Image: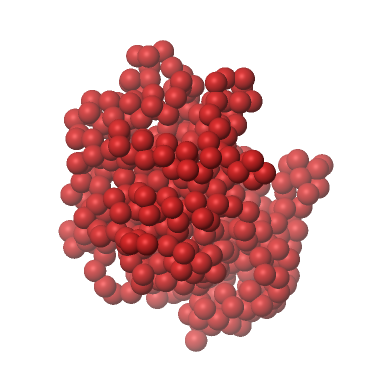
Length: 438
Ligand code: PGA
Ligand code: ZN
């Protein structure tokens, strides 16, 4: 039996230059599995807790040396001698060792880093690809990528309140082609922005971050870029939004406020839930938008039901902050028909086992699953293998720009190549939506 010999962590940097942790699991027999943990900026209120030192003298309080110490001592001792092939057992031990209900004692970063490094070490011991270890011997489905080509919200220093404007090349014949279509559209967008005299510097996820007058201007630019690149808007490449509306919601007033525009003393909108839904409906009627993530706040469950009833028969309604990859909130969402798709972020819940549980539950009720990076990323590509192994069908990992983003897309190119023509690219728009009748 191959067992865990030792676990060591290290403080490394994420793509924003903030500290995060990397974990190395060494097995009897000498194989080493590693993993690094990402970090969000627009985090959901109920995410598992990312632990930081809080010592203002180091990295402005963002250091993770205490987290590293927890891995090197407590976690190392707890898992030493444990079978590397019992992922559920490993994760359950980590959850029990932590003892809190949100992983705050050891930190979701300590727990997730260990959990993922163990899975990598197990795959390497068997001499198989990680996506095969996660998914088994079945046919491989390559995910449709969603490229975040215009960044706003908490990810960019501009006046756009919606966080992400994405392009979805669902009509491509393969992942490699979808990537090419996405890149060509991204480059066409760059040319258009330059022609208009806009800045072409990029935001945290590699998308352009110019100042634009309105959401309409952003969406018009995307449609133009798709067309300029030679593709059919809607039929071949559609548009997805992540409004990250929890950031816009004023709980007291129960209104959605364009806060960045307000701060910049620009003209801004303040909408009730019904007005926000009507606004999204208006955008969907005008533009080839077929996916909306976090169109409403995580505090607005009733609104989500109405939104899904209104738009969920024709487009994908994705819950990110609302569900935080947590089986408990997903269960509520299924009961209340709050969405028809869920965003999957490993570090929102903190273990591989619970993430898989959430994905499987969503798939069983016909919901779509979108595997996601975080805005603060590392060069780790685990999520690429996760999206393939669990047949999730979709992945969003930023624009095709910045190496921490392209690392995931490049890994998917490798996977498609390894499968040598035997994989299928998922045209998400041919997949049935789980439709709410009530
Ligand atoms: P975050 O953003 O990683 O900053 O939370 C990603 C998202 O909201 O989907
Ligand atoms: Zn989101």
